Length: 87
Image (cartoon, rainbow, N blue to C red; front, side, top):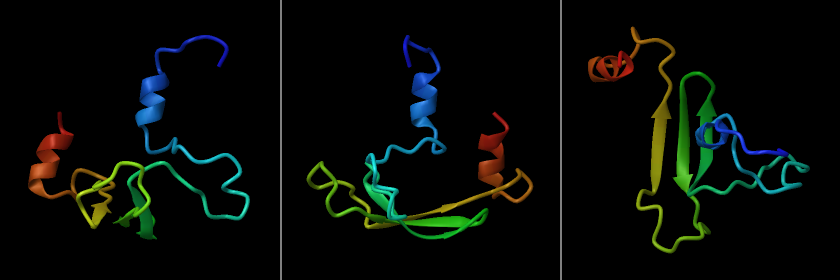
């Protein structure tokens, strides 16, 4: 970028724009900057993450693992998620 852009914070917050080390994708295994690593994925269904033991903040993350379930539509989501998605 040659000048500031108001949308930069939105880009940085998007999971579509990960922060990875330069050259780390050359061998097919990207090195990210977050507290978790993807341990398993089923595209469009779920992602499993495990804590990254070399995360730069000692004691974090507090969770050992987490699972993110993908809901393609409001119809598939649990009722409490449907309410949140309608906002």
